[in-house]
Length: 355
Ligand SMILES: [Zn+2]
Image (cartoon, rainbow, N blue to C red; front, top):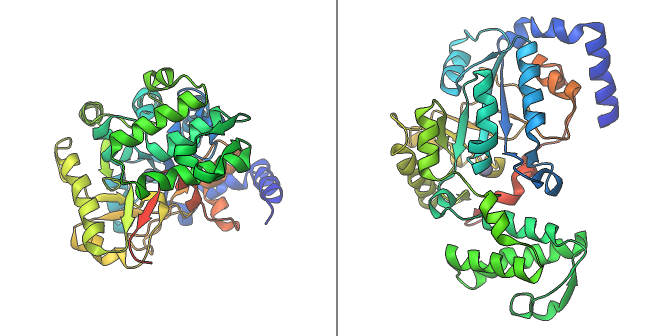
């Protein structure tokens, strides 16, 4: 179904009051809407990547729609217990944020807290410890800041020589910058120096970007402060990386869990697949590590029939309209054909190991 037709239908259902009726059905009552968010812009990140970032006003508007629809926002752990016990309260919703960016600490949490809603952060910890920008994302952001310029950087670009930073040119250089640290075995610090050099070549003021902490994660201290204020920190792998080799996959989960252990009173048992990449072979590995639930980026309403380790989630972005969002709160949007959303987190994803 075309997006325009879907939007018209959702608006029509709203006008007829059918979406309001849907909110009260037994079907909706037995389902949990798990909402997924990424970044809330500190500056202009939502213009760079509107799939990954939304303005603070949009988040605020979403929470108003949740409140106005009379939804029950549950803590994730409670929501999952009630889902499988078959005693969810009406209109159940759970709020999740991926990665644990600094903008969650500075922008998103104050908004969520003002509404009094519980919230889960799937916190990836490698860049939180490093306290520097996320490399792939920052490289892409800097190339966007320098859009329209010509980049000459023979040490990195090799034979590419001068590259005009059109959209296509940015893709080519972005790919080269993704591969370069792997091919040269660069450390986190080396990668950071590469970003500073890129900014200088593009005449972008990197110090200002660092000071604003764009595309950085919360530090462990900041995350700990939020945990004490009620934020539920959960598993998202240490390096935001999945492996098809069990030992590497498990090490990522355990390295992540070990950091969270210092910040939480209890063991972290809820997991979110980085990039939404959920494969069947991961399920027994997660079960053996006492992972109680895992969320994907496949849009849908969670029901008791879902495997606990393959829970669907609606990843909300700035491009969605109020009608679409309300369609998910009521559940009617779940009946409309749509595309998968796993690509939404592509910037932050790395999958390694055998195919
Ligand atoms: Zn993520």
